[in-house]
Image (cartoon, rainbow, N blue to C red; front, side, top):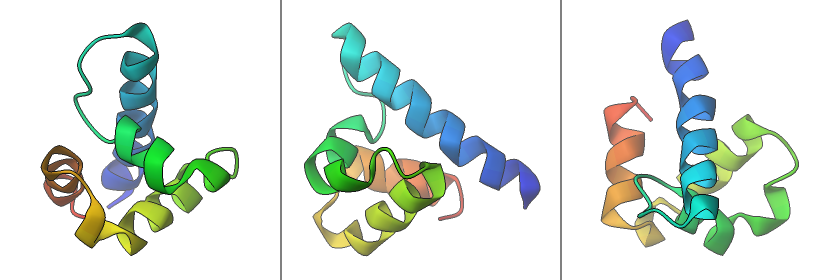
Length: 71
């Protein structure tokens, strides 16, 4: 369980970094900026909660990332 909780912030950080670098979005960066912009500075767990609240509106890629990490 601890590994999963540590993996989610890493996935979100990597997604955000790749989105800034101009590479294709491998995860949730686009969804975070679209649905959770106001919570981006409140910590990874707050962003994760926001993504979960917006699960029905997430891209297929982001929904898969969450599912693959047990969220």
